[in-house]
Every structure is written in structure tokens, then in C-alpha cells.
Image (cartoon, rainbow, N blue to C red; front, side, top):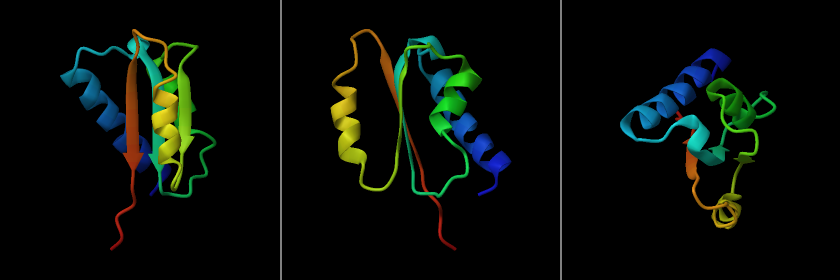
Length: 94
């Protein structure tokens, strides 16, 4: 997946979630991004946080492979009053 294509997909999904909910980017306290793709990007979560100008103290984590158990543990450590966003990007084999 090309860089521009992955950005369009990721930002498109987040835009849709934000538009259909009452969540604003500054309400997000946890951002979990899971991808099965090998990425040359250092951090998709960093890219998302900067793009949406999310809070500076956001708990952002990139997952890969079987690291999904960690996701549950991280979610429960979040301070109340914030919203989580959990994204997954999978590559379709043709």
C-alpha cells in the first residue's frame, strides 16, 4: 500500500468516526493502531495525533501481530473522561 493511499484510508476512517459520533479529537485519550503491514512510517499513531491535533498527553500505541492482548491491558489504564480510538489496517491478498 502506497503512503498516500494508506493516509487516505486511515484519515478517511477517522473522519467518518468523528463525524458520526460526538467525539472531538481532544477527547481522545487512547489511540491504538494495529497493522499487519510492514510500514516504513515510524509511527502511524504519531502521524494521526499530529494530523488531528490531539491532546499532548494521549496514550498512543502501535500494535503488530499478536500484540492485541496488550491493547486490553492498556485500555484499562486510561484515566476516566477520555475516549479510545482503536484502528486496524489489514492488507487484502489478491
